[in-house]
Length: 169
Length: 471
Image (cartoon, rainbow over all chains, first blue to last red):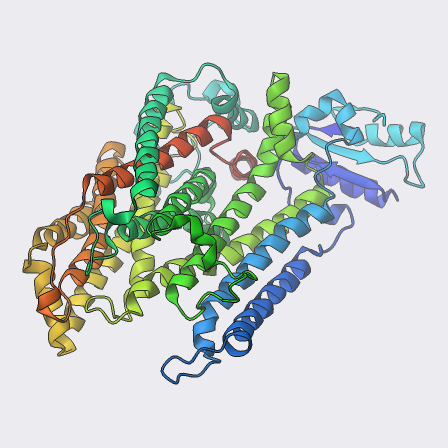
C-alpha cells in the first residue's frame, strides 16, 4: 500500500498501476476524487438501477394498495362519486414512490459496498488513519495475479509516494 | 498550496475584510488559508474537544428547561384531553395546526439547501448543508408532534396507517389529512437517509481522530466501517445525487400537500388554488430565516467565520428577499381573488381579515413579512450579521402570524353569523408551542455537540478546488 500527498498524484499513480496490469486495486481518499474510479477501470454503478426499481415498486404498490382498498376491499359510496377516483390517489402514490426509491438508494449503496464492515485489513496500517483526514492511499491486493511482494513494492516506490507499507491481514 | 504564514488567526476578521466580486458582493466561499487540516481541525474539535464553551451550556440549559415545559404541557394534555386548549367549534384547529405548518415550513430550507442547491451545483451550500439538514429533521419532528397531539386520542395514531386491522377498515385515502401522514413521514424518512448518507464519511473522520476508546467506539459504530475506498465513493456519490434528485420534488410536494389540508375545504379564505405555490414559497422563506437565526450565533460561538462566510449570509439573505416577494405576491393575489370572485363570503373574509377583531394580527403580519424584509435590498444589511439576525427573527414571527391569520380568521367567521366565535389561546397552547421550540433547540444543541455540523469531506473538496484555482 502506497501513501500519497495529494489527489492528483494519486490519480496519476492509479492510472499507471492499472496500465501496468494490476487489476485487484483499491484507492482510498478523504473525499470523492474525480476520475479515480475511472482510473481503477470502473465504469458504472448499479445504484441508479436499484433506485429505479425501488421507486417503481413503491409507486405501483402504493397505487395498487389504494385501488384495492377503495375499490375492492371496502367500497364506500360517497355521494355517488366514482370508487376508483384516481386523482385523489396521486399524492400517496407519489410519496410512496419517493420513499421506496430513497430507501433502496441507501440500502442498495450500503449493500453493494458491503457495509457495515467493522473490520478490514487496511486498518492494520497505522498511517491509514490519515485516509480519512488528509492522505491518499493506493493498495494492490495480494490476490492480484501479478502480485509479488518484492516487485510490486519496487513498482509502487517508483510512483513518488510518501511511503509504501505492507498490509497484514 | 497556502501555507500557515498567511493563515488568519482571528476568525472575526473574515467578517471585515473579504474579497468582493466586481459587482461588490462577497466572492469567496471559504476564508483564505483553509487547508484539509485546518478544515478538519475546526469542525472536528467542536465535537471532540473538552470542555464545552460556556455559550453551549447556557443555550442547552435554556432549551432543556423549555423541553421540560413541553413534556409537562403534553403530559397534562394526555391526562385531560384537548379541552385544555382554546379550541372549540368553529375554531377546531387553533395552535396545533398553526405550529404544525410553521415547523414543517422551517424544515423546507434544509432540503432546499441540501438537495436543490446540490443539483444546480451551488458550491456555497457545502458549509451549511449539514446543519440545515439537521434543522429539517428536528423541525419535522416538532411538526409531526402537533397533529398527533391534536388527534384527541393520540395513542390511536396508528389508525392513520394502512395495516391489516381487526376492524377490517382502511384509512380514507382520498382525504388530504391522510395524504399528510404519508407526506410528512416520507419527508422525515428521506431527510434522515439523506442526512445520514452524507454523514458516514465524516463519522469515519471523527472515528480516526477520536482519542478515547468510548468515542472511537461510538463514531466507529456509526461510521459502519467506512474506509474511503474509491469504489465506495463512486456508489456513495451516485446514491447521494439520486437522493438529492428524489428530495427535490419531495420538498415541493410536502408543503403542497399541507396546503391541500386547507384548499380542499370550502371555507372562505382556504378554498384557493394559489395555496400550494404560496405555501412552498412561504416555507422556504421561513426556513432560510431560521437558518440565519441558527447560523449567525453559531459561527460566532465556534469561530467558524472562515467556513460560513459573508458570501453565505449574503446569498441566504438574497433568497429570503426573493421568496419574501413571492409571499407578498401571494397576499396580494388572495385579496385580489377575494374581490374578483364576486363571492360575498370571500369578500367579507378579506375585509374581516384586515379590519375584523383579528385585524391587528394581519397588520403585524404585513409589517413582519412584507415591510421589514425590504431592508434586505441594502447590501449593508445583508453583510451585517446582527442586522440580518434581527430581520430573520421578524420573518419567523411573521410566518407564524401568517398561519394564525389563515387558520383562525378564516374559521372564526364563515358562512352563518350565528356560529361566529372568537378564539383565545390558553396558557397550555402557549406552553406547548414554546415548549416545542425547546425540543427543537435541545436536539440542535446535542447535534452540534456530538456530530460534525459542517460536512468535512465536502468542504475538503472545496479546498481542493480553491487550490487548483489559485495555482
